[in-house]
Length: 178
Image 1 (cartoon, rainbow, N blue to C red):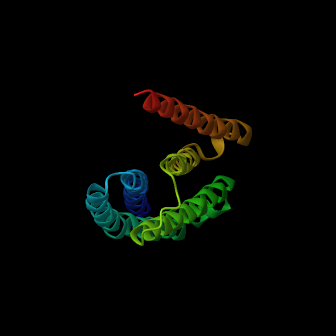
Image 2: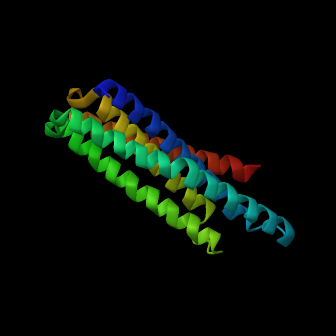
């Protein structure tokens, strides 16, 4: 396969991986909130969420993560010059953070499956934004490469982070007032 085909497949699986990561945490939030329901409703919802989480994780999210890595490594084999670029080192650092995020999500899912609910819904909402920050950083690094100086990039990254936190606070306040 040529570089452009491998790159296209890499992007397709990145999108699928992120879709799974974003949705799994939403399911975690609903799953945690279901624990406050009346016993019968809680049992029914928990059973449903466990099934949905498991299917999403093992059929979509994890295979997409694996294929993202396969095509990413393949791309680096076809274009080893990428590894000489500073932007790629930073991108790979964010990918490492994303892999840690992936496996923490897997741990959360397994804990919930076993009846252990260590996270509150508010904490999970904040946790979900870490994947968003990684997505923003990775996409900008891959697209603008060395055209963006590190000062503007750092300011932009933290501006997005602060913006997300403000939006979460506003959402929380709006939700509380309902």
